[in-house]
Length: 278
Image (cartoon, rainbow, N blue to C red; front, side, top):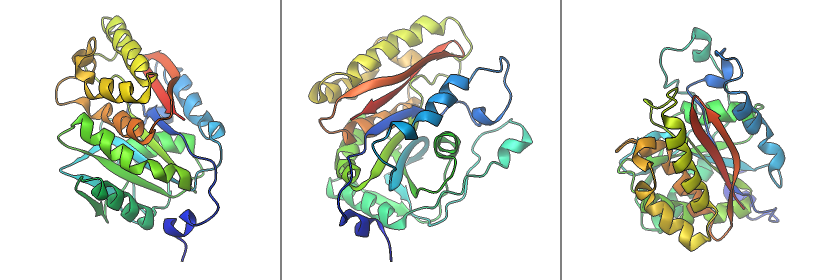
């Protein structure tokens, strides 16, 4: 029987990077907008993601801003369904399909690694993929032929815990696992479309980019204190930072690898970025 443990015993391939990607607004890449090019550049970035990798991933581990749990949890279903956790969009967006397989062996391994690092974790055998997973990955990996598991955030949203969880997982990168954080570098629903938030989001985005591009020890220290950054709480209001926390996991999983901004754009009057480590 093939599983991730079997793969890890094979000849190692190139080390996978870790990436933090924006997942847009609901099913934004699969519907019409005014202006029509609102999400085109973001979609183009996602479509090009696979081509920037050193090899085809053997599996993908995704941390989405749309799943919070009391403790870290991992999807363990072999054939996860989709969770259409958005509202008010056209009917066809509730019929989107992306039948990527799960990987129960990887789910168990992720849970075990996090527990070994001192954080409680569990496998959820029933949960499917929320739109923070299937919407961007349907663009980036449309064939849906790579095994995928999703890792939750911890609902207390403690930055240090998410950095630690990422550190526990960094060895998976040497086994062909691509670790993806899916969120938004700006996520204040009141700010989208409001030009007053353009300079606000830019100040925070510049700080975030500088933090990501700092040496690893400084990077972790700055990300732990992200709420002290310029306009941080204007961009991620208190208790609503779940779209930023996936960045902590991928930054932790980066280890000592350098980080850099790989996409930046003003969308709906706010600045949004993507980051890559390694």
